[in-house]
Image 1: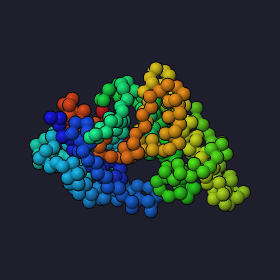
Image 2 (image 1 turned 180 degrees about the horizontal axis):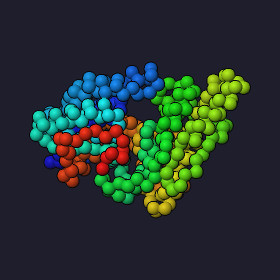
Image 3 (image 1 turned 120 degrees about the horizontal axis):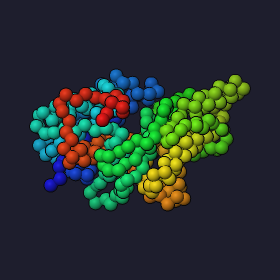
Image 4 (image 1 turned 90 degrees about the vertical axis):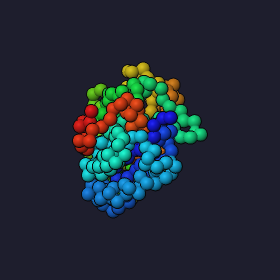
Length: 341
């Protein structure tokens, strides 16, 4: 029988636990933290305190939903990073305690690789198509924008990444200056469907290779608002939908330009997207359209797997378990992706 993996995700403001038998998801429970909305962004101290309150009830619910007990678990997988140190520490500490109490191995997971491997989560009685190796994955989230060449479950190479702001940061920061609620990305997406994407011209970066930059886009958006508000104090209110449509369209064009070039250079036809921004409806349509034009097989994650979730951590943990790549008890959390092996 394939191993039963308990996954723990606590990298930011969602506490999640999942149980997988091999690559098949039996449960996936998420406790979100609504308190951050009033501050316009995640407050690290509040996030870590909420994780402390949520971690045991969430794990208990995941085990019950899966019809299993702690005695059935063969290994515990946890997010080591990147993320907020205090939040990561809660999940890591729980995993250490669980591992010691049950005398089972624990497996540390790179959160970003978990997002990529979410495309391989299976469910009972559901036929889910998976990309074939090698494939390219456009990983876009609040803090990361990357193009990753995926040769195998545990063999990945980042061929392009942002040199400053990420796509999700551009959405959230521009949404904030327009007075939109946090998180801004979903609100921008909704309003963009009502606006004209060609109404405003925003800066597009010139960056070598397959790397990204969104700081210039963000700055040009702020300058547009500043100059326009001096002439019309109600400029944002009168043009909010067009502003959102132009912002979203520009971000998507920047993302897809490099993705298309990378796909051509590596001669790859299986293309996937992952991460929180992969829930953006405009990006999903644009990737699907490029796939039709270029003969790609495109893989768009289910919306529930675009946000942070423990199912993807457990899935990555399953393949690490199979490879015998266990974590030691002296492991510490890693806030930045560069600190992970």
